Length: 94
Image 1 (spheres, helix red, strand yellow):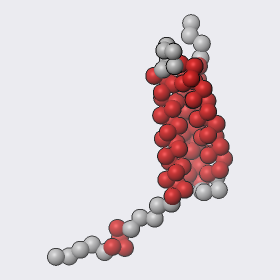
Image 2 (cartoon, rainbow, N blue to C red; image 1 turned 180 degrees about the vertical axis):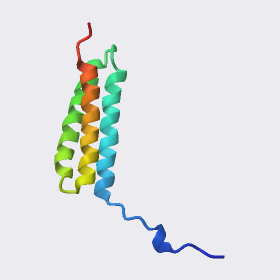
Image 3 (cartoon, helix red, strand yellow; image 1 turned 90 degrees about the horizontal axis):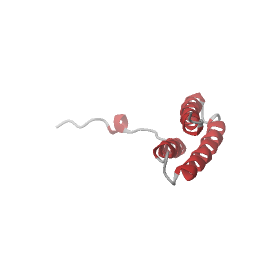
Image 4 (cartoon, rainbow, N blue to C red; image 1 turned 90 degrees about the vertical axis):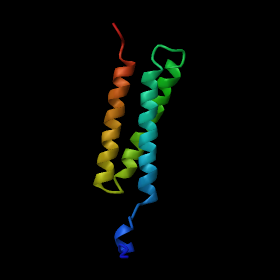
């Protein structure tokens, strides 16, 4: 029985990039929860959570520039997505 070369199965995953990805996922979830809380008594808290998450992703976006252009671009896309969610959530309704 032939086994694959163990060197081919190894992936070089940086713990910093994993943490950055986890932060982005949690922040997008926070922005999504602010949309779900619309019209409930949790709406104000959800909006503050979304704004705090925007600050976290903005800081991570600035810090990720040192990690490389790919991680900075992904972080910038996350920040743009969260900004759009915040604009839709906080915009006055007519």
